Image 1 (cartoon, rainbow, N blue to C red):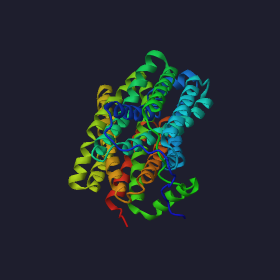
Image 2: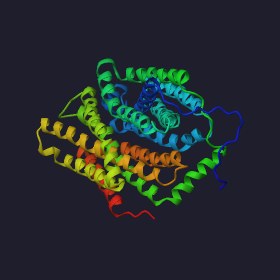
Image 3: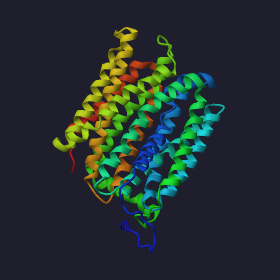
Image 4: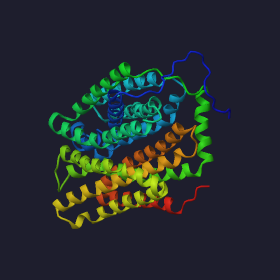
Length: 406
């Protein structure tokens, strides 16, 4: 495969790294959070959504499945374009596509059009993966860690708080209002990108085929990348199975709870996500491998506790669900930080592509978890979902404990 090479286009514009304004940093954090939130709005309202359009729990489970699968495909097929073309134009184009997909979801008359729109949402929401490297590029070296950390905090908060917002909005204004509101928020992101972002000179001149080929080359070369991707993908199966079936489970007997309660569980996840940056400091002191093992172990333990739910009162079950959400969210975010630390050390010239491979594996796991979780919930109930999450997270721990980077 031809080597990847930098451009020599004369006069191409390149924003010089300089101190970023607080306004720009806040925009980048908010933009990343709002973009990635589009992937998760549907989860807390699947119960009311399915009832409204007259479809089964198994069928409506394909909404988050196709959203996550679209995101994985988008990262694989579209993320490398950021190294080849002006990232500002890519962000604007994806924002426009995401607005259209969200509006189509809000207007969907039945499950078929909604599933098609869900796939489109996933593909276009990858603009979050263009915003984060944009922040790293624009920030001067002395500010890069702080700026990227701030943007990643916005992204993580978008993931966990999206469920709270959508659950409440769906309960009071209907599930369609969530998609319309999301489209409006992305329109604001597009406006901010147009006003605030400079143009970016492409980092490479290689063809699209060469960029995709380099992903396979990196996968074959680095065992540490394969281990990190496999472990994070296994953890994501249980994570997605939980969140994709929680609303349906709470909506049914004996709970009979609405979307706002399912969404409120996102606050428990937020507590875990906000504590996760501590993992970065532990990784600096004791190494990312230790953090990855501890994180995977915490996820497995948190999911295993859900197997005792039938033995508890209804109130006890709700408290255990919340406590488990805090535990596994913290463990998954800590493990993701550790895995990113591991792969970024492999090749300083390929960090975007290494990150793309890791996230493809992660969101393939998300899509599989949504599909499997909905199937298990429909046929065998919540205990089967808990067993799946426990088994896959235990598998991730095994990968970290017994694998070898060669």
